[in-house]
Amino acid sequence: MKEPRPYWNAYVGGIVLGVVLFLSFALTRHGLGASGGVARAVLAAEKVVAPDHVNRSATLASWAGGEKNPLDSWLLWGILGMVVGGVVSGLRGRRLKLETYKGPRISVPTRWTMALLGGVVMGFGARMGRGCTSGQALSGGAVLSVGSWALMFAIFAGGYLLAYPLRRFWN
Amino acid sequence: MNALAMLPLHLDTWIVSLLIGVAFGYTLESSGFGDARRLAAQFYLQEMRVLKVMFMAIVTCMLLIAWSSALGWLDFEALFVNPTYLGSGILGGFLLGLGFIIGGYCPGTSIVSMATLKVDGAIFVGGVGIGSFVFGETADGFREFYDTAGFLGRFTLPEWLGLPAGVVVLLVVLMAGFMFWGGEILERTFGRGGKQEGKEQTGARPGFWRPAMKGGAVAMVVFLVLAFALPFVGQPTIEERVQALDAETTPLLESRDVQIEPIEMLGLMHNHVQGSLGRFRLVILDVRDESEFNLFHLVDARHVTLDELKGDAGRALRDQAYDTAIFVVAAQGEVRSTEAWKILHAQGVRNAYVLAGGLDRWLEVFRGSDASFDTALGDRYPFARPTLPVFQQMVKAEADGDETAWKVKPVVKAAAPTGGCG
Image 1 (cartoon, rainbow over the protein chains, first blue to last red):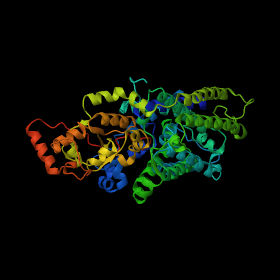
Image 2 (image 1 turned 30 degrees about the vertical axis):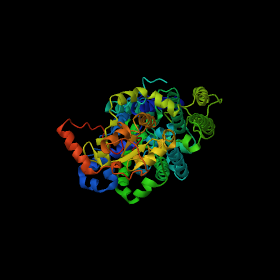
Image 3 (image 1 turned 180 degrees about the horizontal axis):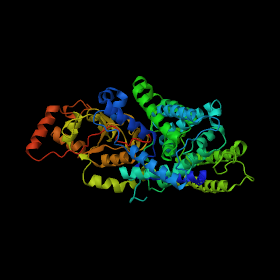
Image 4 (image 1 turned 120 degrees about the horizontal axis):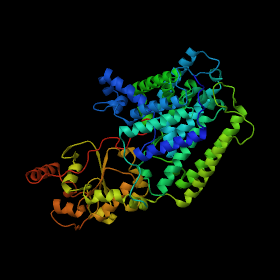
């Protein structure tokens, strides 16, 4: 296996991402999203397993109750596209390889546990915040939503707060 | 004002979403966002990749939107702006931050990480699914906080700061430039250099003007020039937006798709839409002079001037409280109500209609005489809202003759696109 190619310069990546985000707004009226697609996939599964339960809960019903099909959303197509785009970019950069990214001082199972835990916290937080880094911080940030900017700073606050206690896991 | 191609195009089709997703995923992966170590490094000040990519993207997109709006190519009011919920937003953001440093990804980055076969990324995606599930199962318990705490609706930084949009854009660009500058210094202080294997060197290299930085600096200079020029161009005024949307509104008005006859209006007043009961909120906006309004007006009509509609009162009608609203504008005839309808349209208010023939026609139909009044009884006339049987009789009578042409489309909640990750 050859060495992975270097990543794009961060500023260039940001400009390209900004253009993609603008295209999303210009073509569809809304920005980008990621966590919502995952949430909708989960809802769809929940609806198949326990439709009555979904209809009884005010929150679940507002997303997937009755006739509503949680899979009928641009968010899911977006996620599918993201996987395709990720694979293509990974191939091009020679990074398509089964492995685990982790800090140098922790074991692979520890890293997996942390990834799961972080994912759960983030999945919950993304629904609480009505969006994640993509749908809120990035998309809402670009259209100058007050709530999105508040959320963005809260992300950095949360991250920096736990960074020191968790330094062993990453360094 | 260019009235030919007004953005946004309403291309909410799966293929567009898919292609945008491909571009998004490709960009994230190529920018190094598929690697948890590089993302986490942001919080140890070793590599400011997250900050640089995010703020560069925000600044780029913001400038593109601001300039296309200033040039009249894009209708900002039609874009989805994440509604502000300070309570749940800040709590959610804080949790996102905790999850970020614990798990090393955010939802979008974990998806591209998974796409490149990273096991930690795939596990993180699974975790996001579990977290969403837990939220769905528990949110009924804190619904009130979730829906109301610090809720301010569509609320932008320029509105909050009371500054012109161009000035706020300039401030954001300046802030981003300052953060990039600080980020470069932090990277040189805390950066790991080439210590980690298999990666490009990112840390200290001799000389301040590394090639990577030159690109960023050039881009920032261009952005600053664009941002400085923006306040001089200004954002389109409401009058200009009305004019720019002419191509969109004229066909609607000329085909009389938005003018509703008294019979349909009466149906709306009795909760009927398309001839049968529906669930919606009727908002009647009376744009005549106040003295005329005091003499007579429809039951529950709200008096409002065109100037008010052009300002905050008009913008407020886009609020979540009006998600299920059907707006009908009434005037003496149709001239002023058509003008008001155009303003509403330019404010981004949809589901708005004009009372055909105005109150003159209304009185002709339901009062059988002209619009002269001796006393100011307001809405205490029977013809201020004829009863339901009157409506039913009219429908029956029309069914015998020509079919009633219902024009009001039933409203579905969230007529606006669900944005972001919603």
